[in-house]
Length: 473
Ligand code: UTP
Image (cartoon, rainbow, N blue to C red; front, side, top):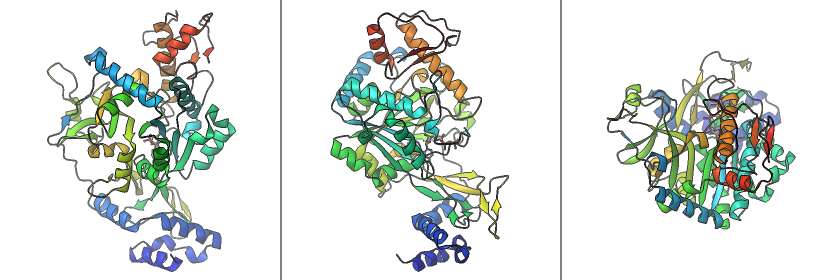
């Protein structure tokens, strides 16, 4: 496409302001701006501006919303035999090399306020391993256990892609075969101001930001990851977020539930800890599985209880999913009513004024558009939700302090290590919350879940004394 039609298209779409400083730019700046502009789907921006901006935020319709069914853990009334069968099926799939790991790591991590890709954040209590290393070692260990090294897909953003790749190279991919670690960038969306005009971040740069974790489905398709999976005989993708080191990223029972049910997308839930807990809720709407966000579901409904006094909408989403490869392709390509919707997020967006001077807004001055991966659930055939123990799967690092912070996550890791040790007969004193006084750390290469830990511990001779600073590696 020649440059003129592109600029003309922007003018025609009422977005000519993007090129307001174009004539004054040096050639490199012009090139950059044109390349960014070429990424933008003007029709999509126009549609989103009309539906999400000008139409205002229509209140979601929650009439007829029901709590979603889920597979309970055996200790909460589920069938131990069904769980055992699921686990066996998942292990068979792992031994057959059908499963790959997938981490979404394209977020901006603004709440944590850490300078660098979030996956490089030091998260473990003793060795201060970065998040990426924790996942890498879990994936390495699972590959060894099932005799098939796993592929790992990592979605980055334009902003953190190079730094992420460099980090892995510097650390020799934490022992993984580099040929099995695949990085790809997610898509970007332009921010618009409250009149729907695409914003500039600088005279030669559009205010672009990652298109949300839901953008992972398009990005998996566009990057060739799905084709690579097909070539390698992988049909099942285990999805988790970069901020949650507790996650059992390769969980045979979860994989087995998904495969045995012929599910296209499956999810883990934890019972909400309290009514106002800020997690999405698995619900049924017109017979389809949906996630209703905490900010959308009226508090009255979040507080509803059943006859036994339990929360009715109890199934909290913790952003752990399994996806079928061809389902991803179908949703990524859209068509026939199968497309992820965009959501709007009002943000403070650094921009420039008419004179090209930087503006740091004190309050929200525009809107970003993002897709969410759980919005694929209503399109999935036979979706399954299974229960998991929070302590085994979920302790995200979101905020610098307080709830879901590095401190709470470290404590949750310590509790998990202490739990595994105590379950296998080690005497380790803990407080009422299960937190040990001693600083201990278990490498995922020693044990990355209850089973693998128990096996390594049984083999370990002599058993080490539980001391402050004990590292099991
Ligand atoms: P969050 O919703 O916590 O967003 O992402 P964030 O951008 O990381 O952090 P804040 O809100 O700015 O503080 C949940 C997961 O989804 C990934 C993140 O990397 C994280 O693993 N994500 C989010 C993406 O990969 N791309 C996105 O566009 C957004």
